[in-house]
Length: 417
Figure: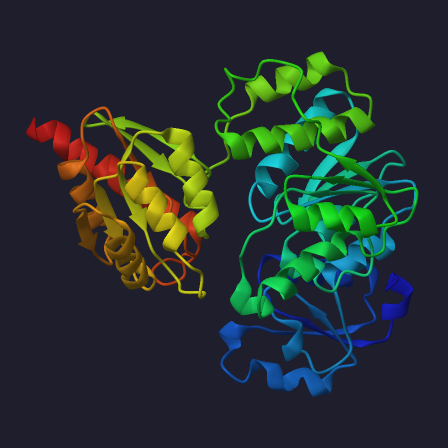
């Protein structure tokens, strides 16, 4: 929807968090004659009932489209509709690694001297970037979630699809619906667009056969040694391969790519090394909200002795995770509600040895347990394989709480010793 189509309308911003507030500022600047209202969950349980008073809603990603009862658009669609044609967009999606890959592509292009901005599900809200003049050769690198993609009416010039496994099933209604939402990243792609994809995932490889975009699989192997990079593990290797593939579309010299990768530090709460305290290595992987990324983290570290699991129950299965925990030689397990009980059952079923298990709602108690029981020289990993909302505001809150108690209890530990 173009800006000129909004003039004189009664517009409801549905959801008034970070993106909703950015949308409000956008409308004030470009559509001052519109009557703008807001409705948010914080307004109370009846916040959706005001919709009938408006001509149009601008829905934020966290609100399912089934709850919208009037014509609507989204901030993501407004961004694409009103972006100058001379600017380019790179959109990145996937179940894991979006933020790392998006930031890595951004930094590589920045190091190569391109005019580039980072936005979307990471960085500034997209409409905030349209508040200032857009250079003709500007490249927008956009992290796109399934929530943002499910009703997207455009496709980026370059779409990147990293991986797919069960996530957000409660929001989308099932795995097929979730993948359908992700797949919309190329639903409107044309022959001049590119689709950079991970051929190791069959669903994504099949999508590559159906899109009108030029399909380009990730480079099979990175042509430089990235072993000394802080990015560890198979999943980060895939992120690097994705970023290299995109960089090559812009003819970025390989030495620039290499230097940027080696200088890249893991983003907060993504396999973040908190430090070594009490002879224990502490890792914050709070972003892991499904079993698959937690299993990646266990494999990557290779020396996990204590793991923190559990959170909001979205109906995911934990049998493979239980097999991984038991097979990796992990001895100590902290279980948080609500999925902690189901994970405990899976561990009991799949593990042929006794585990030292703590069920708790307290991060302080969990960290004290880890300090007491984790073998010296081994790792303690926060990677809950479940969303955070049962006990914390979000994954950042969970990770920050973990890091706080690691340091607080470390200080007490050092004082006692």
